[in-house]
Length: 483
RNA sequence: GGGUUCGUCGUCUAGUCUGGUCUAGGAUUCGAGGUUUGGGACCUCGCGACCCCGGUUCAAAUCCGGGCGAACCCA
Image (cartoon, rainbow, N blue to C red; front, top):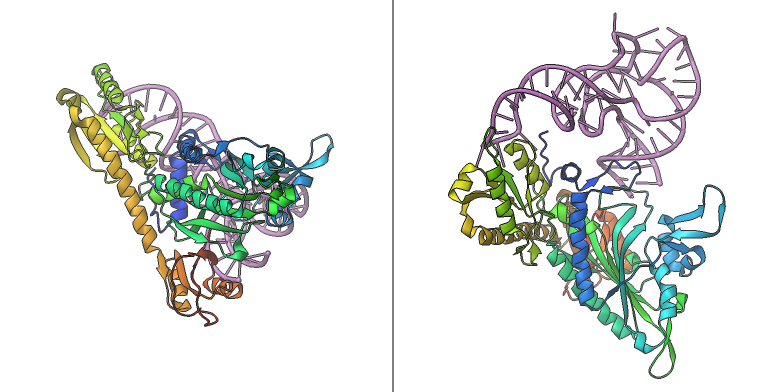
């Protein structure tokens, strides 16, 4: 079936079509907000998860697992948290035969599952810092629009880190480390981002303050990529997480947490694809090189296929790209015409296609087609390995460059509110205007923009006056329509 | 949170306004066979659907009520 949607103009259609065709997720699971992640998609998702795990491991985090279910009483301990998450949290109250004695909560995030244990584990300053993460499913029963990978009711790859520290300074230091880890993660994912300090009235439930990573989707809407949160001592007090310090005094710990999810995978798909479909970067691609043998009927194809296998062996497990992904090669032996296979793998985003027929075998010279430009080139077998390594690297860079170009274009500064409104309406993105720092004014601007306040950059200089109250501006405040 | 529109084979859809040759048509996918194979080719055959519950009626895909689900717009 011929389908080609313009990624920017018909992003919704493009996204759904690509996910379905490329076999990333199947949205037909008969329940709103839950989607089946198919093997090709899951394979890429696993790679993303391991990028994150490796980074966290390198920075001294340990992986663990805490239960899905949380006793109701414990879940309700921290009141701001309860207020913030209560509305979208599922409660398990009965089996088919009887009511449960104690209601159980299905985690929307795991603070309340982890911290009672932190309270037991942390006894002395020697136990700190404690840095633990897990990658699990969490449930958030949002009634609003749901979308594959981007907005789901069951997050299946929620990676959450929770740390505890002896002092406020160490917690601050941890926030900086977390931001650095996430920067590295998004660099590896080739996702351009902005980091904002979240305005008070949008802060995570139960937190002191947080930073959010944001990017801009092809439809011009802003999307939150991840949050780094300073929890202060609120949870420590609610869950009685105390330690004996060097001075022999009992003190509450200072905590931070930060999380990402499969949403980042969806964002990568959206930002990296083109009108033809997916374009996989090397460290997410389940398959890097697909070999399409040009099989002729009534000929002995065994020799040709053997040659394909030889090429496969030659390339497989070579390291490619800036982040040294292991090349995976697939030979497409399906009984389809070559043309159909070309389109198929293009839509699924495989970076390199090799066309190997009699001619190539005879001349030991292979046709290499790259996904980003679709350019064909003949390459000698001897030079193939290096050529492919080089090309995959180039493809990664092209994709990243395009994403960055888009990103830059979509973030704009405005002298007047009118200007900002006009821009947000016509092309979307993230707009910023001068702001005095008062909640009231921030909310007013958001209202007028028909968007929401995303945050500000602490170190960004600003001169001039707030677009609402005309008092001295404290920050450039950023706004956008969000997912 | 409010409004509008919509729900038919796996997918995209015709049919609904005006109830009855609708035994629900097509395209595509899928399966079998043939033919072909260097950019989604072609031919033959086959499988395959009226979202759910209730109402009106001699008769419901079509009209009415409710539920569930989806899309878009506004706050």
